[in-house]
Length: 390
Image 1 (cartoon, rainbow, N blue to C red):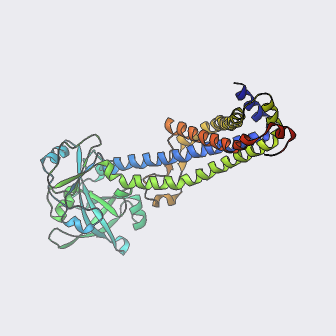
Image 2 (image 1 turned 90 degrees about the horizontal axis):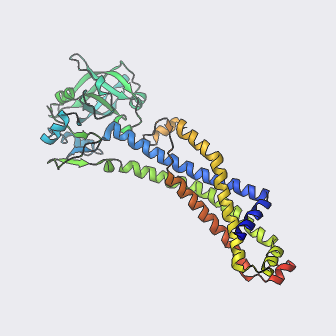
Image 3 (image 1 turned 120 degrees about the horizontal axis):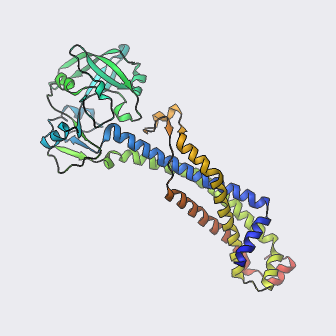
């Protein structure tokens, strides 16, 4: 207890030196928690948006379907078997037919994916209810990215061309009935959405589909012959890998901040040991053991870490809470990163994150405070009282 009181008195007596160390270390605390919260929030937002818009509770792919090979689409279609049909009828699943096509907005050529979806489906957040069928025109939905790069807008009529199941070229006029905004690029980039039965009719694939998306709370009870189930973990694998890569890159920043704060504490301890030699000699003459002296200086460094955590909490808690509620605005270029993050990121801070960061910084601070005290082990009381260095 006496050692703790002495340590606290010493760091308070250091005045400005202690204040600077506390401020620098508190900034490291807040920055680490903020950056980790941003990456956690980014991951959760992108994951939830992707599930709501396209992944659902998992997908059944036709055995020939390869999303990275458009040439596979000509073979990747079949009538969903009975287990999947039952889910579709009860609106616990949504079927999607995918086909390659071409559009000619304003006379320009662009390769796209034509995706057919039921206008009555309730599984995905795609506004398919707007795809009201018409015998005269084919209604279509496009995302804001597709509209921007193609120069399309609501009410435009464009020519869409494709090759049907027999390899015959065909073309029709399609009317853009709405442009929806989504953070999920899988339903937006170079795609148009039209009523499922119209696409089946145009291509010559009655009642067939390429993928079947399950509802979020629906789990497959058995395997379906000819169809491969892809869980949300599999579908989100690339997203998680991207977030992990960006987290590792971001960790470099707060590692540098932490190292700078640790360097300041290390230099402070070295200077303190050099300036307080007579004090240490007096303590040793009064019966302090070298171990107790080492503990005194180590506790001083640890107390700086504790004070930094308190100071960081004073300004960090309201600041991080405000950002968590209002979000962190992202520039427009962030739309090209491949994340479904939208215009704002809302950081999330868990108890494990806050406690883990606090314990880590305190542990590092304690170690850095202990390293310079090794010089005390070879200190002689008589030399210390005379002010000689070790």
